[in-house]
Image (cartoon, rainbow, N blue to C red; front, side, top):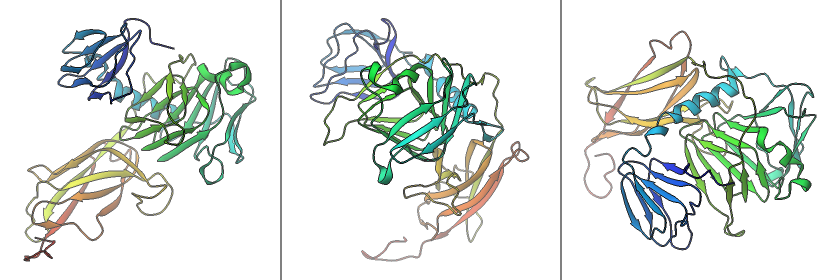
Length: 383
């Protein structure tokens, strides 16, 4: 399923590097490289019929048509926030899960999605991994789905895995394939997604969390793939390569989010010296949304809360602001301190609730650091 001739094959805001041995085949499409970056094809090949569209520099062996375009990535810059907004809208209404029309049950050997048999939009809310016991592969089965219905699967939670043997190359022998062009897997919250197994996973995918990392090792994704975060497309050492994205179109009818303007707020941190009260520049923080239902902050482990947005550091006024936060509860994790200061014994703070009532003014938090004790020699850790 190659893109049409003249369409962008790949648009990136970073570097594209083709390692020795593999190749980037752009037959029928373009490669778009953002301003100031480069396409490094050393050791690789570019399909002779493809177009390499780039804004920075080009190095290596390129056997296609080169088009230098300084504004190559400009048409796509607004898409990231639009996709995040749509992902959240598909999953929730007024910060509550979108009403489901069917049930999803993990039966160990398979997860079964049972629709209501009538709705033109079949909605399923999944708050578990689609895996067998101990994380193994399982089947994916849809039942009682009307012909031509759109299927929206909202996969909720901070870390999610789909590990399946379902789907295949031959449509006639793979029941899951029948839903391919009307099925959307929506991940609005996950900071970590893993799509694994030996099957050909059917349907389109939307990763709405901009701090997310999706790792794809399954042989095939058969549908459009949209991520607002990062993507690692790779193979397992024991099963070789051949992993592919097949860009089948999505033709379903999803909820109208064109007018969606969800209420958001911010959390502001003011960092000061614990003794003098003077503001401090250069303290680093991360924001974590409470998503796993476990009391207290969890930033590591198999089911942590969800990190949101990029990290920030306090400016000369001592301020660090996390804005655009949707309604909910958040922790702050301090990751760096100004020179001469030490991290607190427990560097995680909160909960801080972003509500509709305080969305306009934001949540103000003041935190302080202690200076390190003077010391000498190799054992000095707090200077």
